[in-house]
Length: 256
Image: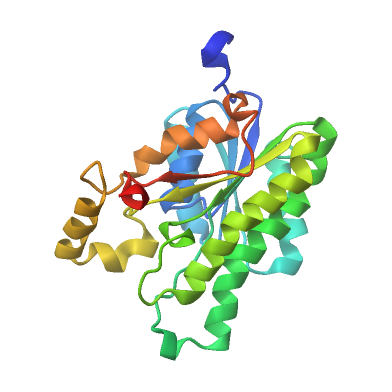
């Protein structure tokens, strides 16, 4: 496929998506598979992974999965090795695994702080570092981190999450600085309010959901399909000269 359409063609590429069994990770994996990439979903729950991969394949995509707890940082190399057994070494990484424990500041423990910083900030770097070698050798790679509205806005009961997501924007720049000259770009997507497991508490309150929708310029909260286009764009040749950036897919929430 040539021309402009060819810029978005991911056939022959392989993507590893952490947190790929549900929510934002699964939505982005579905988009990459729809553009031709083979996707490897990584998450803890085997049954959810099986169902997610089967759903992608039912739509004509290629999907494998690895049941793994990526918060076990010392084992990330083995996780990547097993993921590479599915379709070869991935050239695309989507760091979508994350956690928000939603605790008031007075109740945050050292353990809960460390857990959120580990999964949201440390793991994206160390997982990328385990994968970047083959990308550099090939002279081509794409890393997509997941930022947040809280990368620049403060919300209640989310201090560790906000700190990790603010750090994630700078980490994206640092990773881009380290590897872009060798063909591996790194960018981040900052979603607005989308219906996922992390936002279940928010979506349980219809009045709050409506208020958040009014805060956007578009007038609605996000639907997971709204992430499809940005996922393919940042994973493809179409974004070859873009790196170190954070794109807010939030209906204008942060611009209002």
